[in-house]
Amino acid sequence: MNKHFKNAALAALVMVGPLAMTGTAAAQTRRDVREERQDVRDARQNLREQRQDVRQARQAQRWNQRQHNGYYVGNRFYYGQPSASQMNRRDYRPAYQQWRRGDRLPAYGRQSYREVNWRSERLRQPPRGYHYVRDDRGEILLVGIATGVILSILLNN
Image 1 (cartoon, rainbow, N blue to C red):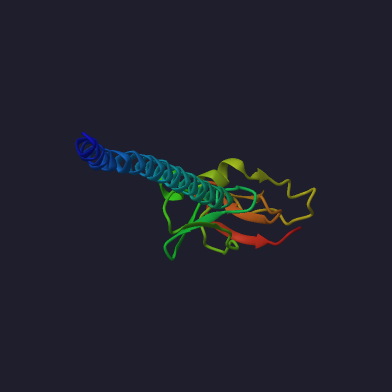
Image 2 (image 1 turned 45 degrees about the vertical axis):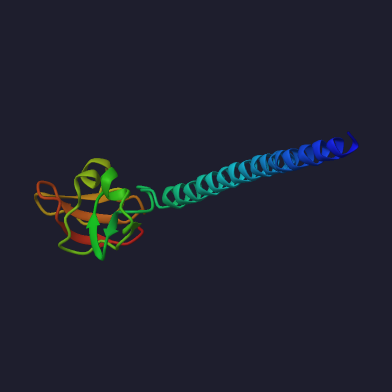
């Protein structure tokens, strides 16, 4: 009987040993799953922060009519306000270029620039078909009424 008891105890230990290992392996697996989930959460948070940084950088490049009179897409400059799809391009950047004689005021300029009273500003009378306008930066432009073509520029008067 003593021998049978030893054999039974030995058999029980042989059977219980792998079960005990399974319990610790399961605990190890749960710990690994928790760590992986935390890693996924951290990666998502980092991605959110990166997207927010990109949004803020884009917001800094948004159109401001007081500071910009045009924009670049690629290496080409366009006068006027860009469309939303152009602002979302990676190669978009707002800019300001000095007005030059012969440039055409964009539609927003013709609508938003204020006409200047040439008498009160002590300017010479504009030719027929032209008028003076003040742009957002205070420059006075002599512009064709019908075409919007700039004939002359008076800087910061």
